[in-house]
Image 1: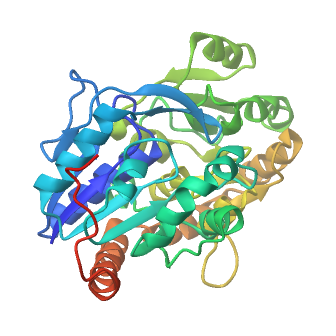
Image 2: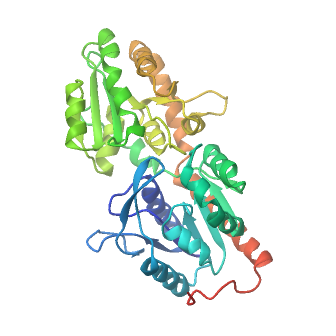
Image 3: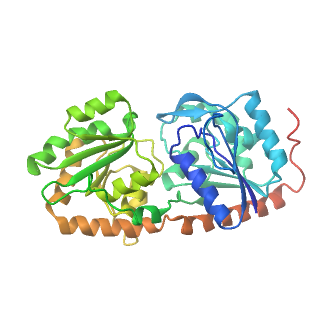
Length: 384
């Protein structure tokens, strides 16, 4: 198949959706497909050969974070040109509700079109206000993918539109399974390591609660080391250091895998706005015992076949509950190892080897649907 994929968020500062799009593209290319990705990117941002840049982006507050989006007449013209010249068998849009390229491409569709919905937000004022403009486009999609039941519930509750498929985000788990622990971050029985990683400037990532749990853990495990890694400001770094954490800073992808493989316990105390939880899958694949808040998306990710969970969950926004979970795992190395083993088994289900074929089948469904319901050309994308 010749596949076009649209990413609404800029590749200048990659986040979860951007990395998902690039990983999906590479997985599909490896499976023999021709793939082109359209995404915002500055002229000096290095991008893979299969990426077409739609130009610079602007920062906008969206879904509890700052998203870098591209819109306007120039962006619309680039989308139309890309669609016209691509001759795609199917086009795959990501987050078409965001005011960026995917929304433009949804309205400029000229063939089979699939969309993936990543966001999970029970109270989205933006989605409510945008409903009159985006719902008709959603209804015309040939297939709608939600990355989790909570993401499916978001579009159903806000727009009364059902997801046709629930397909989780993919993760290249081999990079994490094979990661070699770093001696600087690896814990010992006397000094276990507990880690957090992410865009920790965003309050929804739960860094404040992670730091607030340190005293209760050290009361029982006085030499426990708390590691803080990711992208954040000097102000956040100083706050973490004052709380007694070791500040590591931003890591590239290989370092990130080694970080996950090194810590005894990985913490994900996120407060909301998560539709999936790739970071849980990555940590579980690397062999860390995971402690995570009980967000619906995180509970979905960690659920295993017997109905149990491959992570220890705590109440959202409760530092004392985080400390209890961490202490229980540090107190019992055998239980911690068993949880890590369940996590690694759970993570295997999210590997691209399992996820990519499901996406391919959705494309085939979309092509069949388009042939049935859109037998004639829909619109001339060269027109305004």
